[in-house]
Image 1 (cartoon, helix red, strand yellow):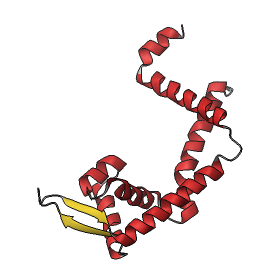
Image 2 (cartoon, one colour):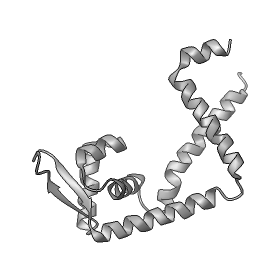
Image 3 (tube, one colour):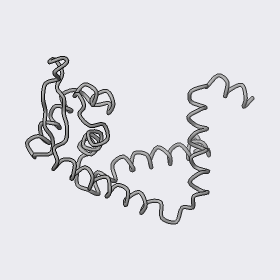
Length: 149
């Protein structure tokens, strides 16, 4: 039986925390992750086509349409045909949706601060450097393999 290596343990922990983090805040506020993503995206980007939401968030078209229709029914969003190309539907937050999204962003900021309590800025920067290095190593595998030999 093969024992878990330091590398195995590192990536298991990293993957686990990433998965937990993606779910933790939406669960904290009682929303699905996709609802949170769409609401925040509309607040940050303004009026956006369903197609752009789909691409930016990695969601299928049916999911985006369903979510925007739900927001519309709740008075949080409005939809209209794109006047430049009526094949596309545009979505934008209503004033009530803006307020809800702003509150969601405030809650998210407070949540992040709570999660980082006790972690120094030096520790954060060190961890970010590790993540940058991992990203670089993923994008240049041949060069990385040669450097480690």
